[in-house]
Length: 268
Length: 352
Image (cartoon, rainbow over all chains, first blue to last red; front, side, top):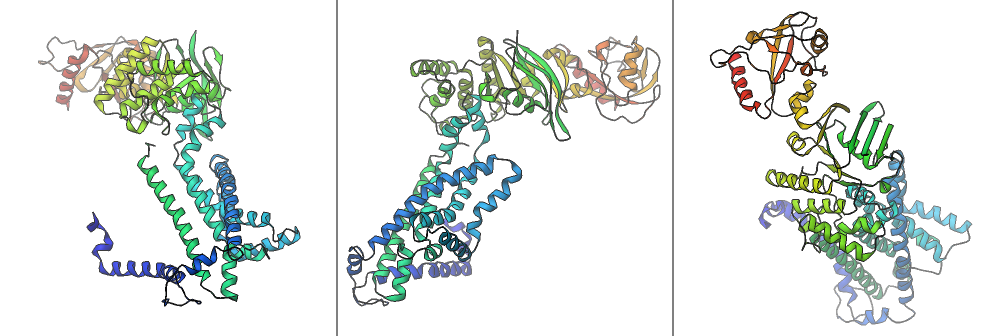
């Protein structure tokens, strides 16, 4: 029942919730509105509206190259992160108990460590390996920071997975590998999909490390930053809004899928 | 030929001994029940038979072959889990077919055997349902079909009725019993429910604290419990705390009701109750008096050798032979004894 929500009953709480909601969405709203400007400069509110800057960003030589590169890197990183993260989570959950917390902390540390520090370290390493400004370096960097998301979602799924399912598979004659393939993996799929989406977004969005290790192979966040610094035109707003739309689309897909899974959920 | 044999099977976790030298054998077609309170080691024993727990010492033989070191997927045993452990993403028929698929059995034979198994548990027409669309009883039948379809040497049942309501539980119990007898498959059943154990089993193994307390037919276990623990664990019984007035070589006299035990072998009396924590059980104790209502006194209960109980780890208050000492007497109320027992209960009330 709607009336039962604490928020609805307490005006102060309601006001605070609305305020937080406003501050969270206002920057995005302003950006999106500005992206539809027909003028030559960014300004709020725009005097005239149009799709002029959206047409501009899909022209070759402006944004497409970096956007494509960002999508490509994210599309390489996401499945790699899912594969390595899943294996790591399995090792953590099924391996010797005394390594568990150490391994877990180590693997999710890129989420906790300041990215600037990570970036600096990575920058030195990449220079030593003569690998700066390479796809490999960008992908590895993104992999390191997206694996934690997979490790977290998959080990949560593994923990909630009934161990007796695995035992039932073994009992019925399945080898450990087939038990994993036929019984554990299907149960992990929702967690893996969620993790893959997180990893994709994380890679697509990554700024600091990529900024340190690239010179010419720019990714989208870096080009957005550069264009703000050197030439302020509304195409930035348009490209950011497009990225925002893509991210939201992915998230909505994820939520829908979550609901579908929940609707089809089976007794555990 | 025995289908299952355990020899001094032991499991320790550090200093804790969970299963302590458990030995028994189950013949082909026999229904053996491991009965005991939670934490008595029965489930650990079952999991060792299934291969999920590695024994600290001892041997497991399945179908006269040493299986102690055999991994769980190579043992020819099928386990019905307490929560059924049906694969949630597979249909009923895929669940039942799983074991056959893992054994590389071709599709035609697989389909035929799955159909037979579902027929057997009366689940034809449910092939394409998912487990969550089934009731508890139906889920259990699927679990049973999934276990039986692979024709195992041994069927293991881990408290399979725990999640069902009373009525369904009785129904499933009867069905399982009929099915088990028809297939003639050796079965090891784990439960803490005395009624289930007594109703289903050819043999009951009562466990406590990781050890076997008593092995026997249900009637033996019930009517001739060898220890106070077994007597107390096996359902309703009348345990009466008694003070021993007098202990002679072959007779003891009890304070309440003023009855005595005569013709007892001295050693039996001594072992039975001079050992500090003792329980003495009188099997089918019969009052001498023809008119128990008129006279509520029991006198001269005839001694039976098997009625002497071993010590059960409890503590009794006063020590020393021949001294007053608290003890326990049990009147069984099995079978024909039922009426008698209820009368003795009434009598007990009057004593108080």
